[in-house]
Length: 228
Image (cartoon, rainbow, N blue to C red; front, side, top):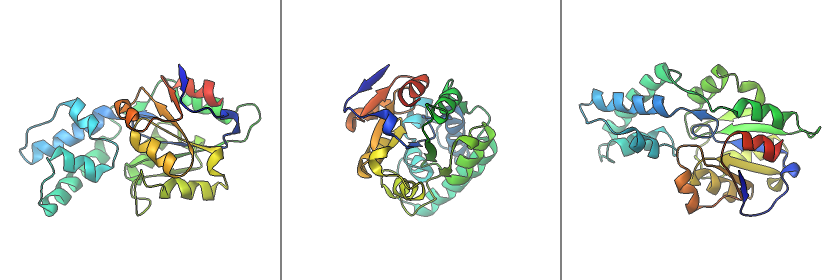
């Protein structure tokens, strides 16, 4: 189902910027396992999967800080982050896959009605695993750029990353949409003056009520219907 909160013409969109985790890919299990591997390593109690998933969205440093209960020892946080990243680097594709219907929707958007559209990824996940996952899952050819949480000095919801994409693709903000599963993505798009699209099937759709996007979709195939 497609629900508009603020009307706009999807066919005028020339650039679609996608979040990664919870939007294009279901990486939930591998993130949960990697966080709990880090906690086990430091002899801390493991966390329920839903709790770990609720911590995702603001980048790996914040994920680890939250999982550890926001300790004051910054050296320990950095060490734990390094352990998590090392573990995740090896295990990032154990269970992770594109959501059903994503690849078909991206193909439909790319080939729609003779309209030339560009697509990009802007994640708060570090850029190297982001690109490796996109490549391994056969999605890389759809995107002109894949940027991560360490590609710029700031992360989403700061609009620096999307503004760079607008500049690189020579696209006006009103011809672009930010697509994601959390309020972080909606606020990012809003901060850049772009249209926003929320997806209800991801990790943090409950947060979208904090910053309602211009349009909401229920499942990946709705992307093709909306923008195809």
